[in-house]
Every structure is written in C-alpha cells, then in structure tokens.
Image 1 (cartoon, rainbow over the protein chains, first blue to last red):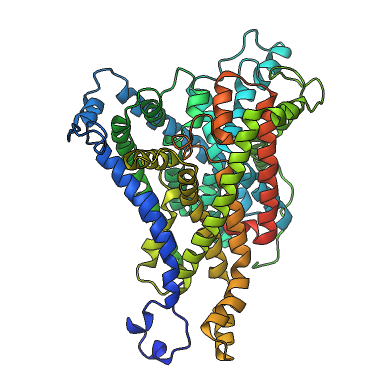
Image 2 (cartoon, each protein chain N blue to C red):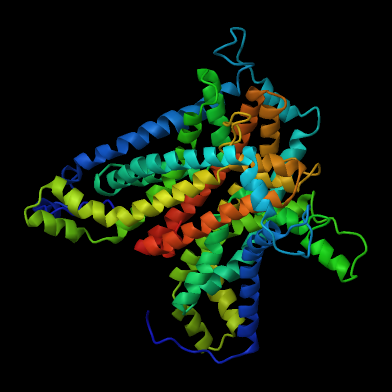
Length: 308
Length: 271
C-alpha cells in the first residue's frame, strides 16, 4: 500500500526519513470528521447499546424496574427448550457447507479468469460475476425458489421428461438453502481468489512443467499451495456472510431450518424480546468478529509479502 | 504483459476446463435469466416451461399501490443515501489518502467494517438504539443506517482512484504556484470524480436492494421494496415478484455498465 504516504516536496523528507514531524496531519485530515461522527453515532454506539440491552431484563430507559441480569445468556447456554444449540449448530453447518461448495465452484472460475489472455473475455466473465452481486438478495432468492420448488423449473422438466414421478424435495430444507446461499456468496470467493491467483507468477508453473511435471501436478504442487492464503481469506469471508444470512434461510429453509439470524428476527418480531435478541446478537457478533479478525490478518500478511 | 502470449494447442484437458468454467458462468447467470422468463410468462402461478409473453405482471406491479409506495420509498431513501454517502465517504477517502493521519490502516479497516459485520446485527443494534432513544422508526433513521453501510463502497472506489493517480500531478500544480485550495479544486477533485461517482452508483444500489439493515427499521405499512417483496413471497409466488425483480435487475445491469465506463470493473478485484 502506498496511498497516504507523504510525498510533498519537502527536503527534510529525504534528509530525515524517520522523523514524525514531517508526517504531521495536514488540514485535509479534518475531512474525516463527518465519517467519524456517522460511525460513532450510528455504528459504535448502537453496538454498545446492543451489548447493554443483552444484560438487562427490560428497557433500562423506560422501565424503572429493569435490572442487570445474565439470564438471557443463561437461557441460551442451558437451552431448556432444546432449540438454541440446534440453531447455532445449523447456522455453523450451513455456513461450512456453503463455504466448501463456494470454494469448489469459485476456485476454477477465479483461476480461469486470472489466467485469461483475452481482455474482452475477462471483462465479460467479470461482469458475469459482479452482476449477481448487484442484484438484491431477495431477488436472487426468489429466482432460486422458482427453480427449486415442487412446480419449479427443475422438477417440471424432470417430470416432463418422465425421469421422476414425484417432485424431488429441492426446497424448504437445508439443501435448497445451501444452493441459494452458494449462488449469492460465490462472487465474493471469486473476487478474493482472482486477486491472489493473479499475483502468482505464471512462470513458476511453466518452469515446473518444463521440468517434466504434468499440468495437474504443476497445479497441485505449485499454484495451489501459493494460493492457500487466498483460499483461506475467501473461505472466511463467505463463512462470515453465510452464517449471518437471514433472507435465504427463512425463504428457502421452510420449517426445516432455523438459523441464529432467524431466531433473532423472531425475538424482535413475534416474541418482542429485544433483550434476548441482543444476547443472541452478541453471540453471533462474537463468532463473526473472530472470523473477520482472522480474515484481516491473512490479507495484511498477503499485502506485506507483496511489499517484501 | 510479459512474454508474447503463447497459444496452447487444442486438447481434451483445456476443452474440459473451458466447458467447466462456462458451466459455472451459466450457474451464476441462469437464475437472473429465469426471473426474466417468469416476469414475461402470463400464467397465474410460476410455471415452467413458459407459455407466452405478456406484460400483465408489470401492469400488476406498477398498478399495485403497495408496490408503488414501497418503490417510491426505496428510491427516495436510495437517493438520500447516495448524496450523503458520496459526501461523507468521499471526504473520508481524501482524509485517509492525503491527510497524513496516524493509524491509517486501522482507520481504513474501521470504516470498511460495516461490510464485514452481519448487516442484520447492524439493523438490530440501530433498532435497539432508536428504541432506547424513544424516537420510533423514522425514515431518516433508515437513511442513516443505509448510509453507514454505503460509505465503505464510496470509500473503496475513491481510495482506488486516489491510489492510482500520480501524486506528481498535484506536486507539479503546487510547484507552478497554485495554492493548496486551488490544487484541490482544480486537480485533485476532477481526478477522483470517477471514483466518487462509481461509489455513489454503488451506494444507490446497496440502499435500493438493502434488506437485512432495513428489516427492523421500517414501519409496517411504510416498508421499502425488498421488505415488501420478502413478505409477499412468504405467501405468494407469482409473476408480480418476477416483474419487480426485473426492475431491480435492469437497475443493477445499468450500474455494472456505468461502473465499467467510469472506472473499470478491475478496481473491484481486490478485497
């Protein structure tokens, strides 16, 4: 990264490259103020409020009897109704399967695009990846509902061809949820991987091949290991996105699927228990933060290597 | 571009590789194509194969007052978000790139973080804050929430442009006697304009398609289009949804083309 480095015409800059004096913030730095204000008021503070709500029995502002309690967390941990642990499990399981499938689909696509010689081909493929990304989640989930439902594209076609008698259960279960989630999040995998694979010197693979390795072996032993950080970063990103999905599991999952975000929406919408919703939110946030920090570490290392 | 491009001889391996990737591209695009088919298919329920072409679903969509109110609200919110996030995000990008701020890496990561945290939690946190503050669920609250998640996009596109252009242009202007203000308005600003515009386009679409952040922040009877569509889809799957989806897809398509023209899609291949 080189942006932000001081390059003003300042002789001292060359004479004393390590001094902090020549790096004093310029007046332009004040332009950050509106963003700071927005983020403090509508991001940092609200997440603080969410954490506070999660340890109160009610609304601490309007209800004078509201008291500090850990009961929302206890409710989740002891799980007497037997649904919260299942829901956490289902969330992580769906996230994991979505990530693995996205990687299997995203990697060949990213590799193909990173190595593509034709500029037009590259631009077209990139549009194909970005166009779904810019279509709303609700719209893309709707598309998958029309494809996978009992009277949807796949089942009608198969019945029409006489291959099956009864429609296959493609929707209102985890299968349908994962299919739609993969479609929604695979562009993130591809975009992360193209950058990483593109940075790998193609001549390394060519060298391996001229030394007698087959194409597959050159890929497995040279390109694949070098793209490992990208694989990890892309997977973490997709996992973090998939476990926080709400629209897709609630439309595609039917009564079969109950994920943590769905549970949160239930607590706000039908049970009107914003305090318990806060506790669930803190739990989901904790999981996501761990993943996001790992993701940032990997990317920071990647750009560090690039500089070296 | 290093050596001269080497044309590989045709073989089964390459053909299979190409076929696989074309299949994957089809997987990405097929659902979008299918929405178009259903939007034009006149049957009362989603049915396949299509039997004809009609515009009845577009009529139903554009005649339905629920849909139109939602569309109007969504467009209004997205427009406000565009303006706010371009001003706030553009200024923030300049400060980060030119302000010589300490801890730039951390600050950049911080301002990008709404993209990384679950959007539904951002919605929940804001819902609880508005609840505690006792302000209900005003439209401006929704606009601020969308702005928060749109700013990172403006930041990314603007930083990408600032990162790419040559500092020496600004230095040359300064060396020729232009005041810092003049350098800013006559050199820096015109140069970053495509990045800021692209970010604004992105911000608009992010807000227009936003669901998870809106979910807890909209008032019943005054919901944005994605929320109305979501509630409708829980009970009914007909062509009206497909028509509404087409409107959104056409919007997205024009955005992709606009982005390609403004700064080139390549700016997005780095996260």
